[in-house]
Image (cartoon, rainbow, N blue to C red; front, top):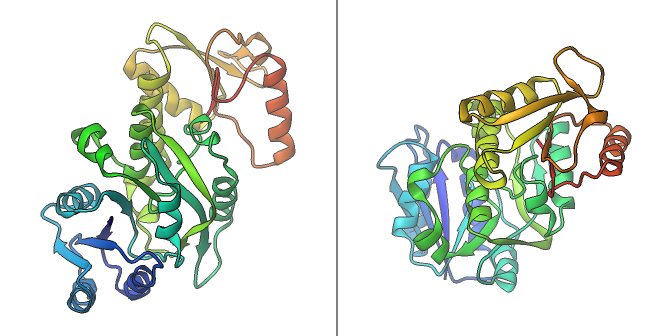
Amino acid sequence: MISILMPVKNAAPYLEECLESIQQQTHANWELIAIDDQSDDNSIEILNQYAKLDSRIHWEKNKDKGIIPALRQAFSLSKGQFISRMDADDKMPKDKLEQFLLMMDEKVVVSGKVQYFSEGEVSEGYKRYEQWLNGLQDLDHWKHVYRECTVASPNWMVHRQFFETEFEWEKWKYPEDYDMLFHWCKAGYFIKKCSSITHFWREHPQRTSRNNDRYQQASFFDLKTNWFVDLEIDKTEEIQLIGSGIKAKRVEEVFKKREILFTSYAFKEKSGYQSIYDLNPAKKAILTNWPVDEHTQNEIQLFLEARGFEFGNNLWLF
């Protein structure tokens, strides 16, 4: 059986569509564990209505507050051999669970492609993220893990044993989906990706990621830089930090707190920065300059590759 964990907070306008997309799954052996996180709309009434009609749907109120406690509580109630996640404002394609099961294996996280949808226009930023996420191949997920979250938060499945024996619940931090990704990385999991769309991601102004400080850029940089220190380097190493903008400053702040040695490099001559022509491929490097323009991206990548740098090996894009 598959256990689907779903936090719910003020999702009433979208919740019925979400629940019906789960009920329409071609694989029927699932349970939904929904945890209401202090909603003040009629989300509870909707959950109760569906639970009365479908014995596979269960719900409780969050005993604490926030997505992490909600997911922890949902897992404690779950019985499935496989664990998946859903957001209460999104929808599943009919064969999502079936496709995930076909690719499931030990030490594997199964994911797939996503498609944003909205009653209005989907923002250009989300369109770029969708394109980038869908373009990743299996081996790319760890190579580019410090650039962005390479697995969509409500679009994965993993064996139950990960949470029972390998996940460090007490160390789980916000943004929780990105932190989960690094826990999989640390535990040596491989990410396998379906070639089809397995999640419909709703874009709307009330999304948590738009309105909560836990999901803003500063939080992501703090999280991934700390994970970089823990997973990628010997703390006696000196890291080459390429870039002079806000992103570089945020990495610098973490490095200083963690007492990590680093030297800063800039593409243009700038006081206090080394020239990028002085970069040493024998030392690990972080690149924080990454323009939207693909032509410039290619120029930067070719420049660094010609000097012995390879993404995911001795160079990471932040």
